[in-house]
View 1 (cartoon, rainbow, N blue to C red):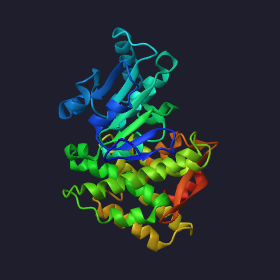
View 2 (view 1 turned 90 degrees about the horizontal axis):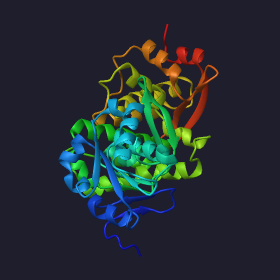
View 3 (view 1 turned 135 degrees about the horizontal axis):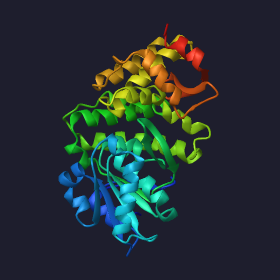
View 4 (view 1 turned 180 degrees about the horizontal axis):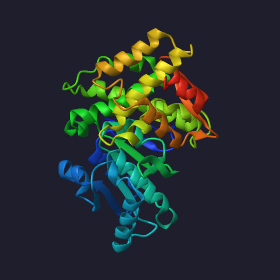
Length: 343
């Protein structure tokens, strides 16, 4: 029996993932006697000092613009100034940007040091911190530089989410809906029960656990995304293009729109029923997320040409068939233009 009192542990994954108390559990998971340097952002340091004040810290500016090679270089310089060495443990405390930056830095600093995460946003807890992808943006293109490397642990403390702005919380729900569409029909039904403002902790932890279970099972089978793991990109080829076109759109909002576009295409080519498409888009709308964009389809199409998943003028599209099952379709850009109904 684990000595953790109120946690769920995903022990069959490449990292230990704990749903529990961030402040308590991190102390038990960091290797004994190891020097810890915490990487966080200004907002998290202000809102959650209990998670950062016990460590030396490097503080970055919040937001996607910090997710760059320039930020990585600045952090490495600070690590050197602090006398960090190959035995130093890097602790990322924050949302997806902080986790990506911490994981990337730890992967390349002195050819690799150990690291772990305390994920402080819903999006990080169910997606960004899970699975070992660590990347930064280059010239606005999402995650163009990065590595696959697993953290020692990821701690998901649902109580921390009470400080999240409503829009950020909804952004995280988009990744949960994605997991439901990919592999968990029951999770889709549970999502429709969620009421913003209620913060039903038991329901929230159930939702988080189910979403993590979907992702960890897929990552365990295909860590380096040679095949099956591609399904986790549902909505992302369109979503990343939307983010490239507008810095005002949050990641989860862009993915929500992308999932609706994918459902439309799947329906048009006959692999998804209109009823399933409507269920997907209706659930997204019920949760307060967008189902369409005012960005032109032409602009989105052009931005998709720089997607990491394209090669030889084709792109892998993840398309829903039923709730709980998706397929990977290799589509030429010529065909994609037709499917997007671009003149």
